[in-house]
Amino acid sequence: MRKSLIVLIVGLLASSALAQEPPKQPDPLGPGDHTRTVLMGEQKRTYLVHVPKKYDPKSPSPVVLALHGAAMNGPMMVWFSGLNKTSDEAGFVVAYPSGTGTGPFLTWNAGGFTGKMAEGKSDDVAFVGKLLDDLGTVVKVDEKRVYACGMSNGGMMSYRLAAELSDRIAAIAPVAGTIAIEDSKPKRPVPVIHFHGSKDNIVPFETAKGKASSFMKLKGVEDSIQTWVKLNACDQKPKTETISADGDEMTVTSTTYGGGKDGSEVVLVVIEGGGHTWPGQRPPVGFIGKSATNVSANDLMWNFFQRHELK
Image (cartoon, rainbow, N blue to C red; front, side, top):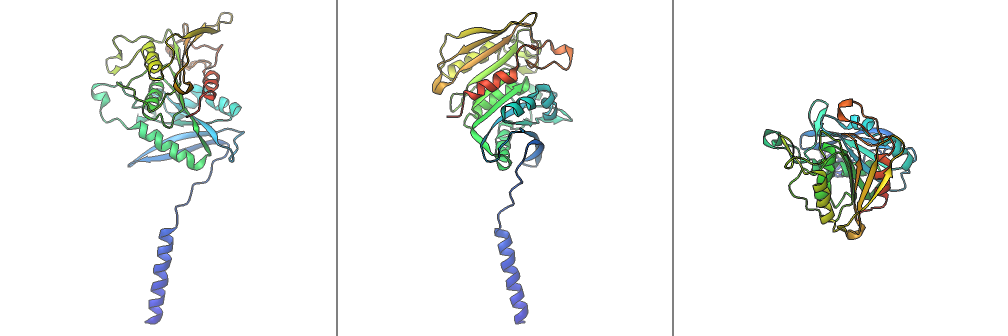
């Protein structure tokens, strides 16, 4: 009886010790490509991570979130944007999250949807927050240098992150995507560099009465830019320069509104004759229009990001 009691007590003590043992931390990621999963309630959400070749696990690394367009997903954004190459050259970590929807054709809850299209949308701002938490357990993240860029619907989502997750997102770079939410109320100034083709026929430069289609309501490019010029308290008079006009290539102009709070600025890069494309990358299909090959959105946005840390 006494022996049985001792065994029981030892067993209870061992169980208690195991219960108090902290959860095992995930293994850190090394250079290369990885897939991570984040739980949002009962829903599994995934994102890809590209850790650059020159990554040093002892040194905090900047992070760029690359948000795909509608009818795409994270893996498709890898080849569409070409950001892995820039990541390896510059030394930042790039994460490619996937939105929600049916099959591989996913979208972001960036706002703007009306009617049935607006029903049952995921909280993608919360998802990005959890993604950053998870990424920080496997990569040494420089929390002052976390940035977001995106294509089309992903660009719209980057604007939403700037408005609703400004305490974690240092700066954004929307490509062919405008503001889709009603009100933008960031906690701090967020620098913006926006890329748009003048001949974009999917997200037009100026939307008719704020609508890109019968099921989506958006701001035009100029309205989006002026919204953030005001939010960042930038100078009203911009400086415009031609940054590329080589040979028969498209003319690309850069309009900068500087002098904002905490050193913030808003930059609009316009590709004359450009379509619904990622500057510097060849379009995968013809119907989205032409892309500039004489400038690189990746290089321009990274140069911009390097000027702006979270303050």
